Length: 174
Image (cartoon, rainbow, N blue to C red; front, side):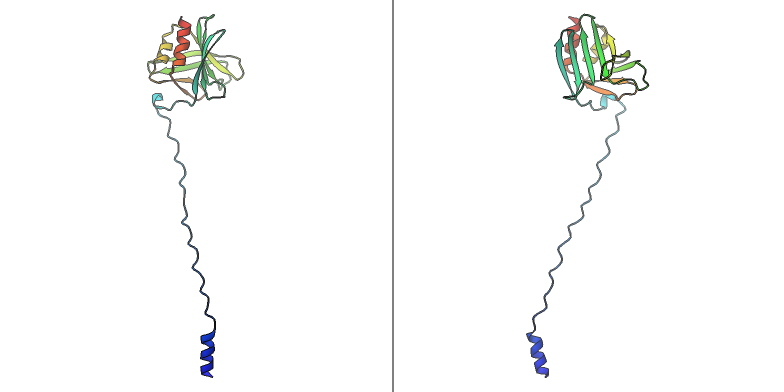
């Protein structure tokens, strides 16, 4: 009987061995994106506001508009030949609701605060006027690559000093 049981055990099917478990892929931890760098203390070290200048002439004179393509201009520099004025207009309105305020223009050649008034336009703009011979226009044109426009309650604009603004100033001086 023992021989039979040994023969039966040797004839039984071999036990199936389970395949090893599939390897678990390592867990990938994506670090959060780094915070944006703080605004530089010196405005000349700050990044330019995204956008481009566009120049055009019209019945009133010439105009340079700055902003993102397909959107309202963030800043407008207009030569009004009949008024003999260069108008600087910044999109937005004063945070305190007052229609009169100040626009500060910082260029590498100096800083100047200009009185502004609400233009009454939609969308709203705050505008300042200069004579075509005002030396601060030259400071903006010849600034080292960019200039800054500030109005209280609005984000600063860091604008490139490109040829479009030079052309508007020259148009008003001729």
